Length: 257
Image (cartoon, rainbow, N blue to C red; front, side, top):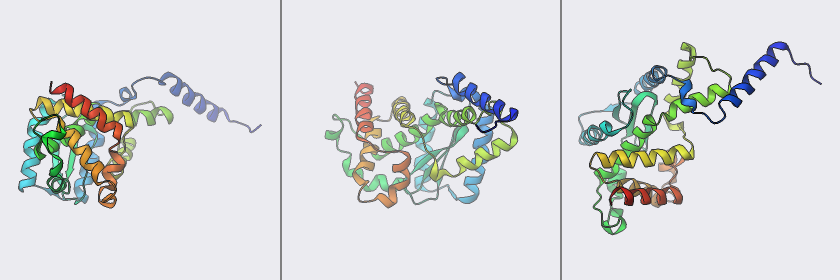
């Protein structure tokens, strides 16, 4: 049997104890709001140093208007949400820890190119336009922030790495580098379902149609085979599964009764 040092034995005991103690708990509680915001702030600085933020354009104004209406509807109020249009000609939208959110510039022309699906007959007679769809995309990203999905990711890592103590400066910088790689951000299936649900609620509160969430998922699904290269990022991070569309439809019906 391989000899295990006392230090290594202690480390293993801490790992197993951490996993046991947090095996069903909310791991976001291991990360404070301040730490979450610090990570997001540093990640946002890196993102914006590598990508141009678009302002003053008609598309930027559309994003600003939708965000102005949607963001106040988010349940979480202990962070400041910022929504910016990033000069990336891809179909995507991302949220960083602490409320930093980006819409890729390629998203808006994609919505216009696919607005043919926005027939009221597809959405129980509801009138849906591309502004509803854009608002639901923004609301979905705000929901990731509101539900603290980033903090849960950091918390899970803390548990399995046995680093349960408060994040130190070095760890904040490491996590900022991880989240700054925005094309690689991932969420669990349950977190995507939760963001769809909360996002539809936030959009509805802002007087946008929650059917916009369904429309967007269907736009992605309809284009997944013919435009895989263009949609690869958002399809990998926001898979438009049949079950996900079905759930979004059921919720939209409920919210518009």
